[in-house]
Structures are given as structure tokens and as C-alpha cells.
Image 1 (cartoon, helix red, strand yellow):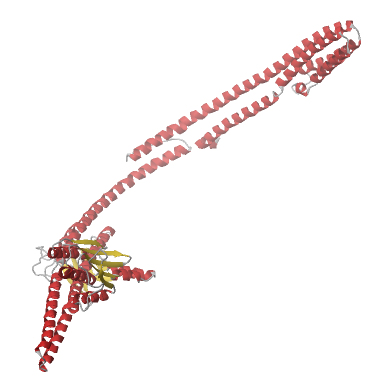
Image 2 (cartoon, helix red, strand yellow; image 1 turned 120 degrees about the vertical axis):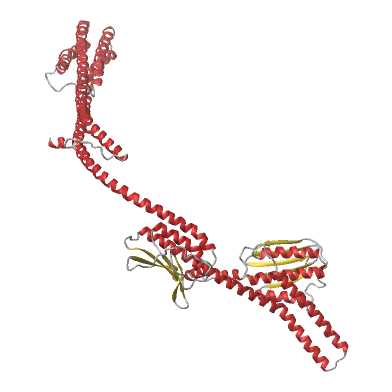
Length: 634
């Protein structure tokens, strides 16, 4: 009982068990009564068939009385035997009560005794005797029908009694179940629904941030204990919520400050990456705004000198003087404040030293000074780390741009020197040899006719050198609206279209950044030389330039519909074709000049670009692949 008083779950379980027990008992009783009623209908049918058999016996005796034949006697005997079998049938005897004093069993025994002791012998005598026996037997059989009717009536009453008993038991169990359910509902309403309602109200109020509501549940069950616990928890949540609100307000202010700092970093990135070499003018405003937002300062940026292995201060916010290595005395980014802050004041300020680095490369250091009574938070340190990363990226990109500019300048000088060496220098060397030859001929006082040939060769060489010089000047003076070989090809075809008097078609299908500057110059010079030959010798009305990249090779074709070559090959000692073949050998490709089937000339150059060769020769190991990728990004 104490358990039921203390536990709502135990009471609900007890109610469910009681309802289940009543249901199980009702089911068992119903099954027992139904099982006891099994065969009642069959017994009633058998008892009713006894009455029919009596009538059949009477009818058979009447026929036997009129026609005393053997067949009629056998019919009467068969019916008598059937009545005896049905009277002793298990379907009838199984439906009888076991008690000897039961009226139904007594009636059955009376009926059986009358048949065995009186009627069966009379039927036998009637078959063997005369008509007097038959008349008396019919009267006795009629009396037996009344006993059978009474037996059938008692069987029906016995079956109906079982059904009535079943109905009474069902009503009884239904009433008991309703009582248990009513008690359980009352207990659930007062000890479960009402406390749950109060707990839901407490949860709703807590969701509305009202922690002053209390359930004040009395009792010793689970919900009462839960209510008291939640009341205590609500009080604790009220105190915790107040503390959390204060912390959230502080964190929100810190996040807003961090957001403003990130916005400053984002806005400052444009000045850093687009400010050229003036790092002071681009970084100083951003550092000052970060100091004002975070309440720190001053900040000093020093760059690392890899040669002397020392730090060189280049920027100090709130400084009284310029940095030692200031390069622009027209810049006043460090000297804006009328009352600059000192980097340290006798131990009253702390210093955070942050490396400005990219990977393993140290580019410089960033000194951040702050009041000691105001310790730097983790979010502030993360923001300062983001600042150093941004400064490191800007410094690294600035250095890479300067190195790239130097490399570009050196590459341009190398290309110009190579072009002068491959074309003009060779022509001048040839002219120098011809002059030396002419001097020897004059020293030997050879005939003027022999010297005239040398003069002719000198004149031809000078014309060729002058033409090559003009071609080089034209090539290097091309004003490219867009970088790359495509723009140079487009301008070249437009230039020669004006010379030729008809449009030069251009078919260009090459991925961007495929060729290096040296390869682009060689390809451009080959195309210009081929177009110059068309202008001078072809007498053409149509020309086309095709440059495409296919199967890791660059194919360059210059076609025309002119007169073509006298023989399917290049003319001997043609200086322009020699230069084009030299360029093809320099590129490691193949060069060919031949007549087109449709008429005209085809100049073709095919080679594997340096990029394609690098891809084909790339090592298979993962480490070397990663190193090449890093080298390409650098």
C-alpha cells in the first residue's frame, strides 16, 4: 500500500493489471462456458431425431400390419436399431450433466429405461404377433414422443441457462472493469493530469523567460517530486539566466567589435594589395582603426632582411619620429597624432610579438603594445593573427610582384638579345665576311668585274639586314590590347591584310598561357616571315593563318593561293626560309614548305610547347608532383 501511495506509476500499473486480470478472467470464463456448451446443439438435434425415428417406427408398423412381409419387418427392425443407436449416441450423452440427480439426466435415464424395458420388447412382439400388439405399441410410442419432447425441452433450457450465465458473468465483469477504470481515471485526473498541467505551465513560462512561476505540488509521487525539483531548477535558472545574459551581452559586444575589425581588415586588404610599394600609407590607416576598436596600441611592423638576418622597422603607429628605414619622407602616416604614444612606459604596458610569415618563411614581426590592466582575450588574439596573416600575404605578394617584374624584364632582354643574335647579328656577320673578302680582292688588285659580284652580295645582305631590323622593330613595337599570342596574331594579320590588299583569315585555337614568351616570339616571327614572303613573291588573292593545339603539339600553318614554288621544296639559299628553319630547330619542332594541292604555298611548323613537355615528363611520385605544384603556384 505504501508503494501505491508513493508511486503514481505503481497505481497506474496496478489499474492496468486489474483491468487486464478482469479481462483475462472474463475471457477464460467465457471460454469455459462456451466449451461446456459445445455439443448442445448436436444433442438437441439428436433428441429431435429420436422423435422423428419414433414416427418412422409407427409408420413402418402400420405398413407391416397391412403387409406382413419380411421387408417390412426388416424395416421396422432397422428403425428400432437406429432409435437405440441414437438414444445411446455420444453426441447426446456428452451434453448431459455429470450429476445423477440432475433432471435432464433423470429424464434421459427414464427415456432409456422405457425403451429398453418396455418399448423394444413390444416392438419385437408386435413384429412376431398380431394386430392387437401393434395397436397397443402405437399408443405406447405416442407416450414416448411426449417424453422425448420433454427431453428436448430440458436440453434447450440447459443450453439457455449456460447462455444466461455467460451474460450475467459478462455484465459482472463489465461492471467490475468500469469500477476499476473509474478509480484509475479519478486517480489520473487528480494525480497526473492536474500536476502535468502545472508542469506544462511551468515549462511554458520558462520558455517565455519567466522563471518566477512555481508548481507547489504536494504529495509523495513522482510528479510531485518532479514539480518540487523543477521549482528548484527554475530558481537556479533565473540566477543562471541573469548571469548568462550578462555574459552574452559581453560576448555580443566582443563579436560586434570583432566584426568591425574584420570589416576593417576586409576594407584594408584592397589598400594593401593595390597600394604598390607604399606599405606605410596603405597599412597605417588600417592599423590605427584596429587600435581604436581593440583598445590597444601602438603597433610596430618590422620586415626581416634575409641577407643581414635582422629586423628593419618600417611602420610605427603613434610614433614621435620616423622609422629608421623610412623610404618616403613625404609620407606622414606615422606622425599624425599630436600626442603620440610611447612603445613602453616603465612596465605599465605589455607587448605581444607576432611573426609575419608565409609557411616557413619569416617575412617580419608585428609588435602589439597594450595596457597591462587589460589582458588580451582569445578573440582579440585571433583577430591579431588574422591581421598578421593579411600583412604577410601583402608583403609576400609585393615581393613576388617585384621579383616577377625583374624576371619579366630579364626575359624580355634575353628574348631581344636572342632575336638580334639569330637574325641581325648573323646578317652583320655575313656582311663582315663579305667586306673582308672585298678587302682581300682589292689587295690582290683583282678585276672590277669580280668585285662587282661581292658588291652585289653586300647590297643584298644590307637589304636583308635592314628588312630584318624593320621586322624586329615592328614585332617589338606591337601594342597588344590583350596579353598573349592571340592579340599579336590578330594585329599581325590586320597589318599584312593592309599590305596585301585583301583579308588574311586567322584561325586561332590555343589554350591560354600555353607558350612561354620565347616560344611566342618564335611563332610570331615565323608567321610574319611567311606573310612577308606571300607579300613579295606569291601574287596571291587569299591567305590564311591557322594556329591550333592538338595532341600535345602546336601546329602553325600559313597558306596562300599564289603561284607556289617552282619545285615542291624551298628555294636554295633563301635567307628567310633558313631563319624559319633555325627557329623551328630552336623550338625542337619540324618545319616544312610545300605546294598546296589546290594551288599556292603551305608553310607549316609543328612543335611540342615547353609546358606540354613538362607535363609529359612529370614524375609519377606524389612528393615530386606536390613539389612541382608548389613551384607552379610560386
